[in-house]
Amino acid sequence: MRGAVGLLALLVIVAVVSPAEAMPRVHRPEFTKNGDPATFDILGGGSPEGAWAIELRGGYPWSSFRGQLGMRGGLTPLVDLQTALFKRWEPSLGFSGRIVDRPRGRLSGELLIGWTIETGEVPKNGPHAVARVRVMGILGRVAPWFAVATGHTVYVDETIRISENATETTLSARHEWAPVVEAGIAIAITKHVGIDLGFDWHFVGAPDRFALPGLHLGVQVGAGPRPPPMDFAR
Amino acid sequence: MRSLTPLLLLLALPACTVDPGVEYGSATLPLVDMHLHTGEWEDIPSATRRFLAERFPFPLGLDAEATAASVLTGEGVLAELDKAGAAEGVLFAVYAPRSVGITTNETVIEHIDADPGRLWGLASLRVDRWRTDRDAELAALDAALDHPRMIGVKLAHAHQHFRMDDVDYFGIYDVAQAHNAPVYLHTGPSPFPGTSQDAPYTDPAFLEAAITRYPGVSFILGHLGFDFIHGDEGALETCIRLAKEHDNVFLEPSAFGSSSGDPDQVHLPHALARIREEGLVDRVIYGSDGPQSPGFVNTYAERTIHAMTEAGYSADEARAVLSGNFARVFDVAPAVLP
Image (tube, rainbow over all chains, first blue to last red; front, side):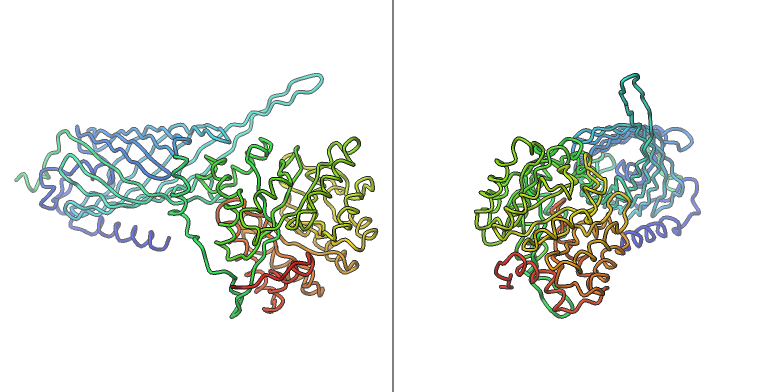
């Protein structure tokens, strides 16, 4: 955990302290001077207006699909589907946006709402909401990234009590907390295709329940207008 | 994916096999875990299966049956013992169809065969049709105890729904006495669905009539009367009193010192300290109540060692708790380090 905090701190420093004179369009390293790779949009958060990107991620125990499309004003709607062992499903809709955008790094936030469906020995389902912060350092084609999220699901239990004279139904709600820590290395193979390798730790049922950490491999694809940063365009 | 899960578990879990024995200060001591469960997932009532699945580390509970299968077989138990550095373990037969399920004597014997040099068994019997089946059940218990590795009897009045002081069931102790077989008894309120929580089923004070009537039978008070419902020490002092007043009473501190039951590591150190204060260290027999989930057997041993250290146990006292008292009470050869 201490290592994860250290990595987060390093990435935040890289993202925030690097030169900011070119705002709002920023000077990118040579590889990205004609626009950021789609891989960095998915894992760093946010997309330029009109650009789209998708990611397919496979791993244990979590696999996922994500798609996002940049809109005017920096807002990026996204669709997200996560599954653990194909027995717990978390489809979500939301949006992300870049909070800090620097040549060597990026800080973004995202909010999602959706529905959790769990099968298996204890079937359950209910609405959920997720807030996530992403930090990415950009080193040419390679970009280490880190994300933390807090997920909240509400399950509604129905209890039916059948007595001699009546049937009584009561509803009660349970809250499940699922903080998530993720990190990885993104590699932009081209502007449109990239991969990432990382770990993810979904603490489903925290703090009462222990969770195993996971590993994943992701493939990102994207296209669309990616205008070069302003200082390259001059 | 199910076939891949054990492999991925091996990658994900930090455990792996350790050298036999556990470190206690500068000493390396043999470890015997006298409280282990085996059996089949489908023989557990659905409410208890859900209870257990919710307590497996995520995501193991999503495929609880596969997870249980990986630790509940004889081979699975041996793997968990290896992780803990334990030399031997004792598997429990259970006949509690309305609460925690059924693990037959035959199943226990079958799993003991995975390594008959390291595994022992405690036999049990059904009591839910006692009026009609009593003689047949006692005969079956008697036959199970004829097996050389079946060295004791397991009872759980709370899970099996019969009073601790009901003399109609004292024939069980006659069978145990005939085989010189210690009797392990669950004490204290239990978290499992379908449990009888009232005092005559959970309070070890209600065992005193049997303890007094059968001085030749060793009574092992499981969980030290811990109240798993309220998370407090429950009948600990009653257990200590019974051990002080009766030479045939022994104490087993399993389950309540787990990371979920005792997150701040308060209850287990306190219980072991009280036992030591009362001069009862030679009555304590270590058990974990595993395997529960992968790694639990090892973790519980570590927490018990921590608790004994906190309570000021010497290496000799720790050796007695971890293996010596078991060998003496069950009249088996002491576990030794290779």
